[in-house]
Length: 291
Image (cartoon, rainbow, N blue to C red; front, top):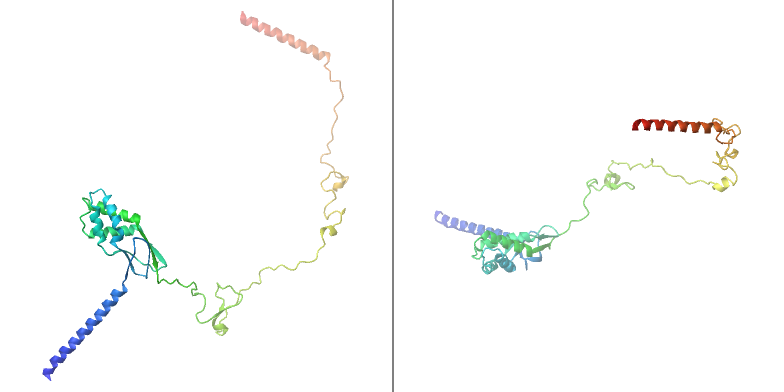
């Protein structure tokens, strides 16, 4: 019995190890399959994939932009070398498909990713100032790239959302009530708990109009209206004023006495005398000042 124990134990260990390896391989295989990468045809345009997938571009799609950016950097960079090295990069990740109907990857994000990928190649075509060349390349790519991302498996949420104020056990809303208020009877009115409907009895209601004569029949022509006299506003007795009503103060105009209005002789003599005295005084003042 002891001689056969060792082979049985070794066989059991071998089978257990194989089972663990198979399980681990299956687990790793599932993780790899769940993560997918969608390669866009170009660095601009649109790309469609499933939610959560990685969106990537190829180095070939930005080859010419990298060449121009390196040559325009002013660092004696060799644009052909940099372009050939970036073209060897198969995939450059630039974003992820969002959990929405669509999204976008702007040019600045793509330029930043290309800059990192170009630096990782260790190319000899970046010139004397590598950082300046990489920045020039990133700006060139940002100006010429931009992707629109579409989620192929996105499902829009339903517009019918559950109401928090309605019962979850099949309660019914009272007819004639506001749907926005919790006026309901649980279990269709069999639960014993009833919330009364709103009372609108305090709202005034207009009654039916009664019969009324037109103004022409009620007040014939020539008949004064109640509380008014005919020809209202005109002076005289027709205004409703009696003989005992007069203006305040009873003022009257007094006539001036008649006269011929001529200038009498005494007045004329007085004026001539005053003129002579004035002339004598002026003459005396003038002679005194001259002497």
